[in-house]
Amino acid sequence: MSTTSATHWSRLRRPAVLDPVGVGVVALVVYALHGYDALLTPDLAIFTYGGERMAHGVPPYVGVFNSVGPLADAVPGLAVWLGHLVGAGPLPSVRVVFTLLSALSCALVCVLARDTFGSRAAGLVAPAVFLTFERYLQLASDGPREKTTMVVCLLAALILAGRRRWLGAGVFTALATLTWQPSLLVAVATVVVAIVVSGAHRWAAGLRFVVGGVVTTAAFVVWFALAGSLRQAFDGFVLVNLLYTSQPSAITQPGPTWSMLWAEYHGTLVVALLGLVAMLGLAAAALPAVVRRSAGERSPGPGRVLAVGTGCLAGCLWTLAVINGGPDLFVLLPLAALGLAGLGVLLVERLPRRIGSVAVAAAVCLAVGVAGVEAVSTRNDGLLLQRADVRALLATQPAGATLLSVDAPAVPAIADVTSIWPWQLFDARMLRFLAHTQPGGLSGLAHRFAAARPTFVVTAPHYPAAWPQGVLRRDYWNVGHGPGWTWYLSRTAGRAAFQRAQAANTSAMSAFSSVVHGHPRWTG
Image (cartoon, rainbow, N blue to C red; front, side, top):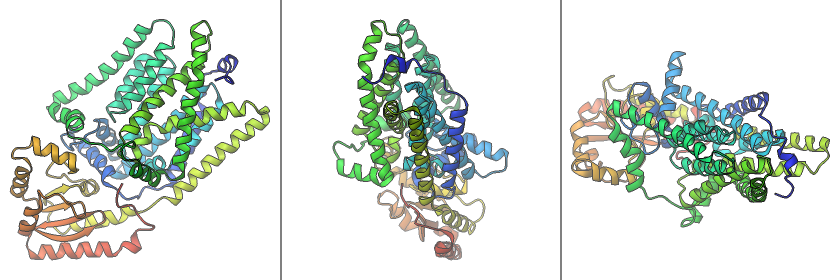
């Protein structure tokens, strides 16, 4: 990076407390503007429901069988527990805590950018850019989403690696991985380069990093072993992903992938792509300075840029190969924000100081304003209808009524009741897993369903799989559609109960125009 001199990098300072605190407060306000009554989609409901089971003392993978890390349920579980202390319901508690985590991630982006580029301007521009990314902004208050927790842990790992706190970097790398597995690639790529360019004692640094990660992971293994759930944890964290998952790719399916990403991010997708290109370019430009430093130059700045850029490259390669949805970009969004901030620093340095300060302030204000407009314009109140429908239907039966959720985890999450099975998402990979691991395969699963005789069955709308259809046709009445699911009631409840349930469903759904404002998203 020819314009990045050793003199510039010598200005690197530990970030002042006030900058990240101010960034976090602004981010919290912007995220809160999006509101807390958005539709609870299946992907979000699975973590809400998992958190509720955790708060009731049921370990991850036992209360809810999931294919990501245990922190995906543990963090919402902590939020539910904290909410209970102040008398708040599970879902509001989880959404408020995840808004705080999202604001914290903005503050950490501020710290990472300032550390990486040795510039206060970068520390302000990067979180402002990060604040505009549409899907991240929406899920800040629509959540919970496990990748928000992952971003916080990953950013902490990158910051600690830049400051040569290798043990702590290992701990947070493990925590990020125990939330969402692919984050390991970004963290390890960054830390390895950071260790290589750090100078002496590389083996000791690498050992401390590994020890931090191994000890943290081992603590979770011990937890599952003591809880008697080690096998379920291995199946969910490793086996399902390794043997039963076939994932789409931006390389093999470019059209659907980019259409999906555009629908999730709109114009901010272009911002993210430009930021990633900028980050990779800055890292490439820093390489000569890193080589010169190995020959005696002492500035640490280029090494930090190269390390973060290498992590960005690893994340880009993974995301091109495997991407399932808009939130998969979360692992890259902080790095894209850093890329634009770093590029901005280079441009501002060419300007007179006063003009450069005005340009930075204008860029920050513009980004925050855009984010505020996004927050307000994309909010919806679909949760109000969902709550009305769930409460109305469940109230038609005695308190001891049982429930089976099939691809409709929002219902047990909203009601805070237990589905009779830990499996919630019965997609193609889960059906392959269940067919190979359950006694009798899917036919055996159908027999168990019939024998369990849950009072209510709730499925995804027009659920296509064949395994439950025979039991549903024989033993259940189709009550009607809710906002994102279909209700069934056991025939053993009686005709009068069926009529009450139908009336409750019709009444709740007919209130759509007066309860829900805007156009909620039914998928996500």
